[in-house]
Length: 192
Image 1 (cartoon, rainbow, N blue to C red):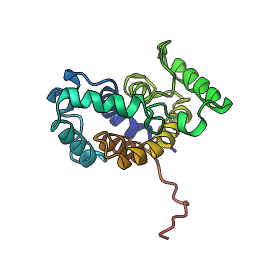
Image 2: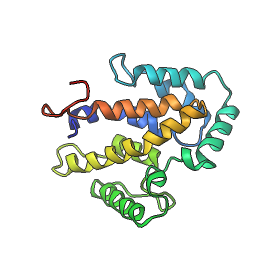
Image 3: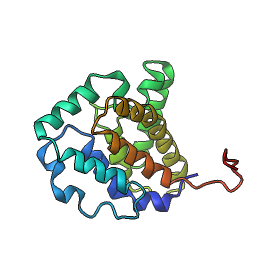
Image 4: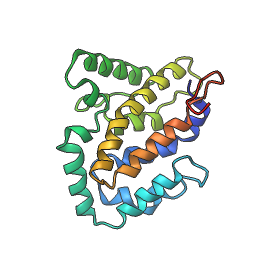
């Protein structure tokens, strides 16, 4: 289950994630993009600070080169969250359609040039959409976070393998999503 209040509290973080996951421009790395978004008690505070520091150690042209070589040319590091799992199978088309309907249900008009499983779009939706108080929100946001969690799992491993500066950004997204899950009291854990 999803803690919708906590997810709402982290809306600004998802806005930040979205801006960091599009093609890098100088304004994306301006301090005002970062300042005040992540408090010290935010679940992704350490990871996002590491990401921010890493990015400020390299030039904008290097960041752009890393972004393009990482996300545009490698199948294992794609920002399309259902691609690695389904590739071009029918199930992917069905999930893309479900996500598109979800966005439209909450008033987001999909850009015709983008697929609905594009991670920056998904983060932007969490940030911009008005889903609080809607009876469909828990199921809808649960689906969205499930797709993000599933898609970023392999992405995170691939980014770690290539020692990408984007590793800590994806880790921060995963930690933020995880913090929005309500633990089931009856859930059995491996550690007892």
